[in-house]
Length: 376
Image (tube, rainbow, N blue to C red):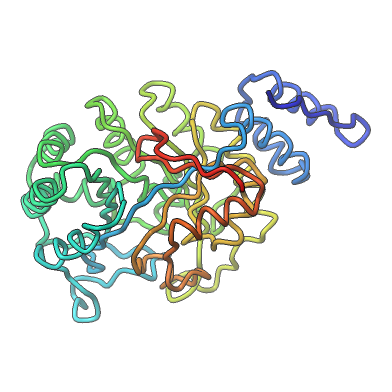
């Protein structure tokens, strides 16, 4: 059992004291109270509350999985201002497009490794349609039936379904029959429509993103959710974003985890925007853990944040560090992440967790525990 935190009344305003008492009592805070935390709470106070929630739910366990990424293409019909990764279709000679054979070669290269998940995301290429990905997944499943396929952001899916003249339900049922088992959380960015118009105006809107995930949940598929923070949005926009996700989770209970993603400003059209500070990073993760009370897990995605900062967030409410990412995923390194070659062995990620004096737990995609690595 975790010990109930104690905070000094003398250091807190009456409103922060009230919010703290609600959190310790397991009560939901409002968006207005969330804004109070963003604007007035110190990170020590936030960390205490977030860690209380994390410890109450998960003890001293920090989760990871053995996974690898496949990025079919960085050629994309969309032009998001924050993206350093994609190359517009008209300039596709600057990008890459993997064939089915090349992607199956990647899958087969892990035949002798204990990976449990393949994560498939990339640009939105007009020639890589729903039939192409369905055939690819069928071959993956035929080759390695136990490999969990988590794939395609709502941005990719929306384009595939519209091009195929399918509803979200029809498209998801079609892909699920081919082997798709869960959805990643990318493409959410910030749901506020005015901010979205500035940073990603031409791709699926907030309503479309939420509807795809809602439909997946109704079909029995789980998914994750992300939020891109630290660019032109305000605290109120972050809270609105989290509140829309929290509301949908109340309805479907289909989200596994919430993943704040730090905006990186290299090699994109928003390079003039200063990146968030470590203090803002900590506030974002702690407040996410406090506000997203119906999300089982909060993840620090280390390829985006950097392994040292992700390790730091374990002290601030985070219970998941994603996976070994045994490849050279480029989506975040091209935007300036500290992780230019984001790959960790199982021993390395276990050691990273043990350095925080927590127990490392290997999980599968749906958070079933596979192996526990106690501190020696």
